[in-house]
Image (cartoon, rainbow, N blue to C red):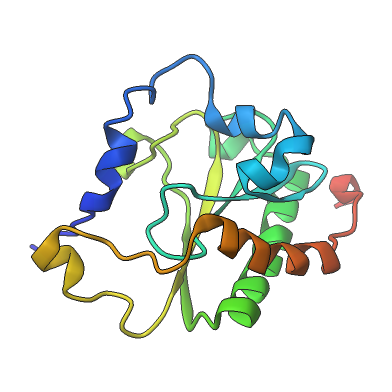
Length: 172
C-alpha cells in the first residue's frame, strides 16, 4: 500500500475550529468587499471561486456553492453547470498564468472520503507540474509552496475578471 504524506496540512487540522458553528465557505461569501483578503477570485450567481488557504500546491483553488448543502445529489442543474463553467475558467487561468501541466480536479464527499467540510459542497482544483513532488515532504516533513497566496491571487484574478461567465444558468 502506498501512503500519501501531507505533513504541511497539520496547521489546518490542528486549528481546533473545524467543528465550529460557522462554515468558512459561508463566511467567505458574506463580504464581497473583503474578496482580496479572503482570496475570492470570482462570484457567480450560484457558485464562487476562491483560493485554498491551506493548499496542496500553488494555485490550489476551490469552487463552492453559495448554498450551504452537503448532499451532492441535491445540487441544482444551474449550480452544477456554473460550477463546471468556473472550473473551465480556472483551468485556463492557471494554465496560462502559472504554466500548469496537469490538474487533479474533484470532490471529497463525506468524512470518510476526506472532506474537511462535509456539509458544504466544494470542488478542488489542484494544479500539477512535472517534478512538483520532490524529496522535501519525505526527508524534511515540509511541503514547498513557492509563491505567497497574495501573489498567486494577483496572478490569477485578471483571468477571472476578463473571462466573466455569463449569468442566467437557470434556463439550463
